[in-house]
Image (cartoon, rainbow, N blue to C red; front, side, top):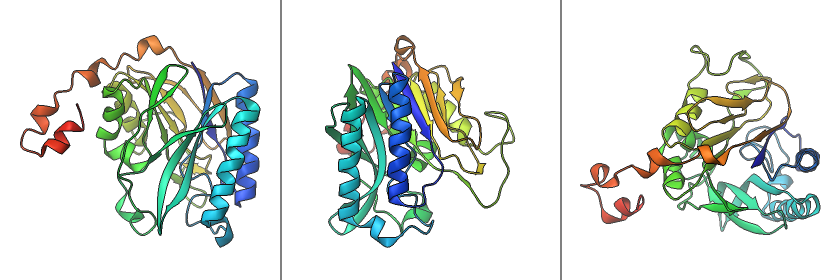
Length: 274
């Protein structure tokens, strides 16, 4: 399977974000990728960066999703599009999955928020497994993929051979730019990516913005925990990789014994891993 991981700069508006979306989708489709994933909250843009309030309305978000569906159908490529989204009066952080025919297959919410995000989003309450061209995959968003391994194991136990991980860590204002993936003095993020793949024996695809000072790279991690490919730090563009699904056995995830972990918990919690 050929997958594409998009590392765009921060868009200055929703319209610019949609232009970047189409540019990177076009590039990935031309190189025969079957699916492309974007970073966390790409539309309307990551919170706190001065976006116009009109870009963040429910109506504007719905219009943007329709445009993304048209792009998927036009260029014949599936899209994982992280967005802010309204459910009634609440705003959640989620990723829509759009088929190559422009059909919305569902969405994955960010269910575990960083404490600093409690005032921005409402946590979601469900997990979903997706399937494209007979390949099952899951999604975990930023903090929950880094700090809550269960969010990845849930998908791997159900047959996912790859989990996509849209996220954002870094800054355009201050920091340092790493030079070597997984270096021991880097923040823990890249080590966590490697563990999510290794502990489940699946592929793990992490997707970050091309910030000036990235704290982790956009990368695809192999089922043995090694980095198959990564985007150069600070460089915008699309990382396109062929993955060998025969390696993604999920054997370690499938050997997990939930009863040993949840034996004193409620049946509802135990059933999460059955």
